Length: 71
Image (cartoon, rainbow, N blue to C red):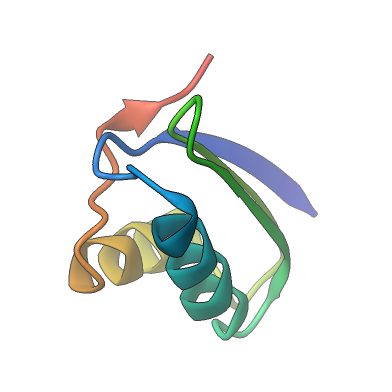
């Protein structure tokens, strides 16, 4: 199991948080998704077949592109 934190500058409200959490959770292999509007960080716990590449592609597809890793 892997955990990754991404910086996502397009998060501006709780609607954004809900959209990200709902869409990413539907990806096979996703264990949990926590998005935070205040910090604009998305924390994702996943196993295969999910991968960083698939997660980033989905985030871009739903208009919340990943800017990089969050610290």
